[in-house]
Amino acid sequence: MIITPLHINNKDERGYTCEFPMERIGDQLLLFRKAGTISGRHYHKGKSATKNPEVFIVISGSCTVNWKHIDDTDIQSATVTGPTKLEILPFIWHEVITITDCTCLEQNSISEHIADTFYLP
Image (tube, one colour):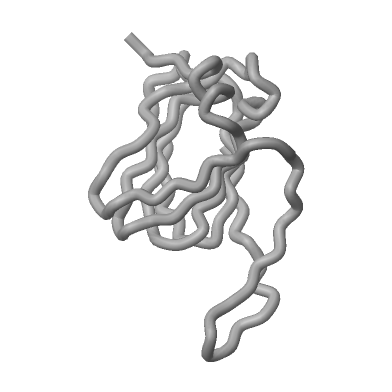
């Protein structure tokens, strides 16, 4: 898991602007999650190019991200606040628990997600 806070380029009374490289093209997912909800609880094998790694940007809000390699037992955890970019490598089980309402961008399509999502027994 790679966690990268995004640089705020400009901030004024209207809000702020962040710039980040868009490595991928095609359909993307814009996610709106309510505080206290859980997403993920799965891993990807990297069969889809957009899941190797999965790129997930927390645009706004705060959440706890938990992850571990599928062969490990120890879960790692981090609390992130948008704007933050997460890169989730193949075979890393992960979950996102929202602390506040969150808006996120996932750089893959629904079909790519479905084709490369697996659950631990």
